[in-house]
Image 1: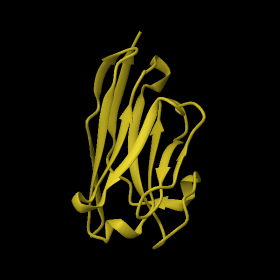
Image 2: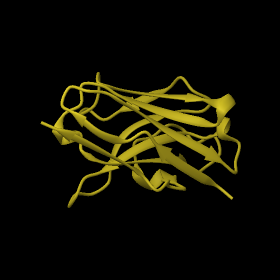
Image 3: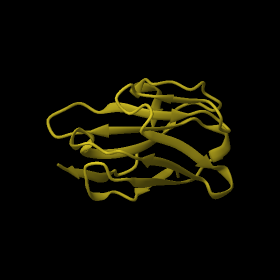
Length: 126
């Protein structure tokens, strides 16, 4: 059974940093694109970053480019999202997800991802 469990969220002041983790299980992690999305209260879930299989290719939303870094450790079946220079507008629940198809090209489209984790809350105070 495919599982994704996010962790690492918390409360941080503006300008601070957090490192989110996504522990995956139930499939061959190396062969799937992984993405991070976020959802703020009252807003739709939006793309943050994605990393291709087995790694290397990366895409970022314009709003986080230069501040966030996505990575993966295939040996540990774990993906990461490093959040630096955080802003209050980054406050949201952050979700990781797996590309729906085996060896799927990297994309920014939410429908191309499935098997969502439960999310981890990131709150940035001003």
